[in-house]
Length: 605
Image (cartoon, rainbow, N blue to C red):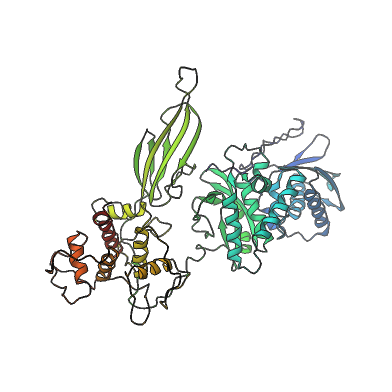
């Protein structure tokens, strides 16, 4: 996604015999922002896109009522979308140098644009402005007269329409009585579902950079999208800020929201149209590829907005109901270093990469126009400028473009289409020689199994719980809706991800639970239970033979028929010493292998 944050270049030109300022370009450092004109007045421009200044309103602590009054006057003028306002200080301020005059302006501006918690002030005003020019005049080294000229991304009418629309949306979401988490999620869900990214907006397209574009036109760039989140979250009574910074070389904007005393990042732009969110309530150490501007990384800013170090809910783990439990087994597999992968598109190609790799897809001609990239599974990979293989899975990326190196019989440039099937591997499942390599990637691409750490690690040596096993089996069966919606097991809560799978498994006769009316979801699934579950899923078919194959399986064991059948169906091979080891705990790599063979030999896929 080619994220755009409003950028403007202004050159302040004055008589050469006085002083000439260097071009003021957002993102570059400059020793002089204010300049002296030939008539003795001082001028400068404030641009919100400048990374050095865009968080400064939060640092305002000026107690001088002289400055306060001027700042409030400027704020009122900006809220009324005035293009010019002149302010005379009650008391002239001694300012013998350019930097002293600049400091006065900064304090007035900081007061005007300070974060107040009101949705139509603070960052809303800051980013609705495109720039402010100011002129200072005084007698000698004392300055009292300041004139401001403002320009905006939208008109006063458009801003009014946008705030009314935002208020209506917040009201329609019926947030009263809901938790702060649910309020934030409802607003985030509305924005990501209803707003589209404006790929064709120019850098000077004010509407695309505004909340008006996001909510009234349903199309905007990141700045407008972040403004919509900012306004509506504050309207819901939750603190929020708009953060600017860098996203892999591009200027970008996203938000900070407060939840349970900590602040979390949310980036609605990068979650537009997605059913599952990758950038929602992320901690400061786990927001991939986002680098906030220096002003958002100062000690004072961090003190006022304490950033959570982990994603929201990341440290909350369910309390096991019984032992043994499936405690994570730290992987000892050395993880590959992310690499850059270059690939030239063909009519129908294939490519295998690893989670975290940067994949650069190239059009096979040197001169082209109008490119449109699509991905069948953008959660896995999409050609968005960052080009990161996000998570394990499979997707087909297609590009349509106009070939400017060719011309057809009618004198037109032909349109061409190329595609590539991309398989993204887990970081810890990359060796084809491992028996679980094919099963893991096959079932991940099919949506049957999922991994850890945003599906970048599979952790094959981890234990597989009973809840996980039935969930994977349920997905393999097509995730059918159970006929019954009430579970009789006392330890299976309706809010858990495995609730429907357990209901389905009970209806199919796959599991009966324990004598104390519990299911024990966090208990590790044994090899005997795994094979029995699969046998029951197949309809309890009678094996062709009654002769036991494994020395540690008795005819009286409940899993006896299941092991005979699984062996005949090539699902179960056992160990080299002729044992089955029924009480052995099933590992995730064994689980995917059982399921893969079941799908291959029983479902005949």
